[in-house]
Image 1 (spheres, protein in one colour):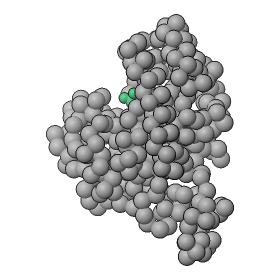
Image 2 (spheres, rainbow, N blue to C red):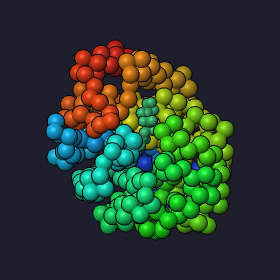
Image 3 (cartoon, rainbow, N blue to C red):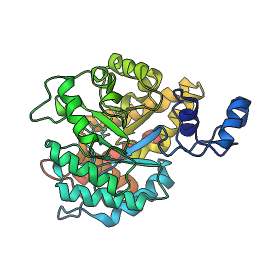
Image 4 (cartoon, rainbow, N blue to C red):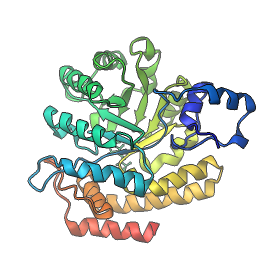
Length: 346
Ligand SMILES: CC(=O)N[C@@H]([C@@H](O)[C@H](O)[C@H](O)CO)[C@@H](O)CC(=O)C(=O)O
């Protein structure tokens, strides 16, 4: 085996990589001699293409509703050791980023980056705000604290009327941290911004040289496919609908960001490997299990509050309640979903 990651290999050969965890090694028997030679003289890429599973982290709160920083170190160890997940997306939807103050978001981002140092492969900080100025402030801060990338959702009170307005907003934020890989976070169900992603990313590197991809959190597989097909070699299309991941993989996504990878990442890593090995029966079996769990949870009113409580139950981490307007999930409800998890996966 060569001590070289698939992501680095992919950047080198300027081709779309397969969907594999970034720390997975390239097998000598699977690659040509010329590539082996080139890899041996190549330094690891600092800005390697983002692949694999990325956990959209929950924000730990105390029972009084303040951010609870001491949980973050053990949380990172849990993801690595129990779930095999080495990428995190912080202060996003699952992290209740839009319900946090800018000051809280900075403190949290700093703690995630500090505790992830030398352990996680990637820390992507969501810096989206309604105010472009606040997003710029968070982007600059992310650069100062050593984040590996930034991402923003579309502003959703005054919505961009067309792709051009959204691109301008993104450009202003990305320019505040020009050396950080920038990812557009599409999530139309929550933002109400229904701009086709393909229209956002066309030639975007001319506006945003640091652009590195999209977190695609929608079910429009035609738009998704067009994004994958259009993608520049160093960009990543990261899928965000966990229950449809296999469809995203079939469409060619390079990675996935999601909430459920916090607690079923170890199973989903197997789904991904099965897909890569052409074992669709196994990949489907795992996807169907995930769907069984999520459809059960959805019938019980699944939202970020329920999800957070479920994560607390399954991980043993004390993540606390969600923040208003989300309301706490009763223990009994999370316990039912935990039981379902055990019956489906264990
Ligand atoms: C709307 C929503 O919360 N979507 C989740 C999914 O992981 C979602 O929880 C999962 O697919 C179950 O529906 C993620 O895409 C959110 C996410 O990545 C984030 O927290 O930034």
